[in-house]
Amino acid sequence: MASHREKLMNCLRSSRATRTYAAQWWVPGGLCLLLIFCSAGCTLGPDFVRPEAPKAEQYTIGPEPDVTISADGHAQHFKKGGEVASDWWLFFNSSKLNDVIKDAVSSNQTLQAAQASLRQSQNSLRAGYGVFYPQLDAGFDAERQRYSPAHIGSSAPSSIFNLYTLSATVSYTLDVFGGERRAVENLGAQVDFQTYTVFGTYLTLTGNVVNAIIARAAYREQIDATEELIRLLREQTEIAEAQYQAGTIPYLNVVSLRSQLYANEATIPPLRQRLTQTEDLLAILSGRTPAEWTPPEVGLADITLPDDLPISLPSKLVRQRPDILAAEAQLHSASANIGVATAALFPSFTLNGGYGLDSTSMKNLFNASNSVWSFGANLTTPLFHGGTLWFQRQAAIESYNQFLANYRQIVLGAFAQVADTLRALEHDAETLHAQSQALVAAADALQLVQENYQAGLVNYVQVMIADGQYHQAKIAYLQAIAQRLQDTVALFVALGGGWWHTDEKIL
Image 1 (cartoon, rainbow, N blue to C red):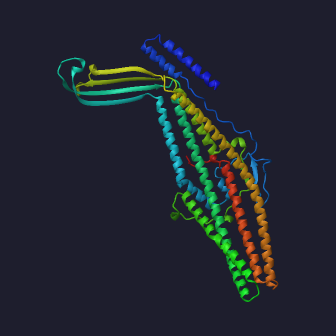
Image 2 (image 1 turned 180 degrees about the vertical axis):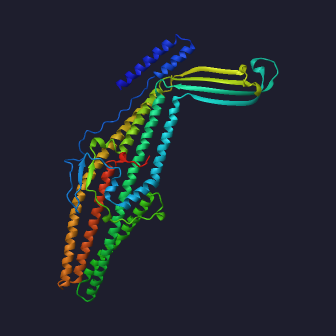
Image 3 (image 1 turned 30 degrees about the vertical axis):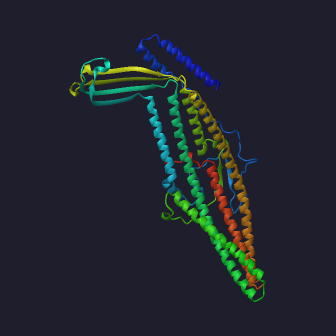
């Protein structure tokens, strides 16, 4: 604030010196000096400086992972300082997924709304630049009047006549204290905000599409595995009922199997509902109604897990995440508003002039004797507004402080999101490794039971029990695969998605 006050005092000293010198001139010379004063005017308010990036050198508590354990044949490697590709979803190696994303980017209504908001802000900025140019207007009036000289003390009779007026006016606001420049700076910051909003919408859209495709594939395969498990439980229950009727097992065994059967049957409707909701979401993301869109047939086996993952440096994260850059643009806008509110405390200057022709008949309108003109300058200075202007400036300062705190919170959230995702991928690999081992063990157990059944050593109920355990292990395995894929998507999104490398016409 000390530098700001010094700048303000220099501006005031400059304006006093100019006014003292201008008083020695006649009006034309004074107007010239006023133009010179405008060109050398001061821009009040703080000059915006981008907040510094956090000093953190890593994202996580403790050492950051370099590689995950190998799970299901894949170990993910983290390349620190790597660049995120703009088309990061290509690393999942699914052509059908690529087609859905391309379709969504071209048809998504939320993205189109963000693009329209950007164009609106760009046009508002272009309109704002008009304040730096003279405002020129022309007019023509034709009217019939009755004039009475009585208002000037004359007893002459009233007269009725036509009056034609052709006029041109020009005005120019001298931006002495930079209020208009700060207002245009604010409009420029709004363009930046809308630009990063478009990129943020694009990033969210692509991330949601990939997540939805993964979720749909996982739901379908979970439904298939659960339905197979239910089929086995039904067979097991029927056998148990027959054994109970024969008196070889107690009724408690039948009740236990029925309970397990009904519990698994109850999981199917929620899975189908989630599947339907995911397909509806994909339709909406693609800009269509659910009835107009056919989902692609993509299984989890059709989606490849990326093994090499770039990790941007913390110092770069704040310069590439759209939400952080959008918050920075809002902070810039709030800074410019302080300048606008500060300039409102000082005088405003306007040059204006006009030239016109007045005549009572159209044929004489363009006679030189009918010309009228005016030229002058206007100065308006606030004297007493009951503290309104002062507190408007204070409100602008507090608005800046609010946006600064919001910016810092968004940065903290971004760092936490990257840290959470890195740890999640570590734990996903561990979970998938355990689930894959459980699936292998269940498959081995099922094979042994089947061999023993063929040898006549066990009954068929034991075969179905082993088969049910295998399918339960498979469902958990499918869930672990989907979670690992979706957390990989989350990492790409958390790092900003590489939009700054894209060649697509997003804006």
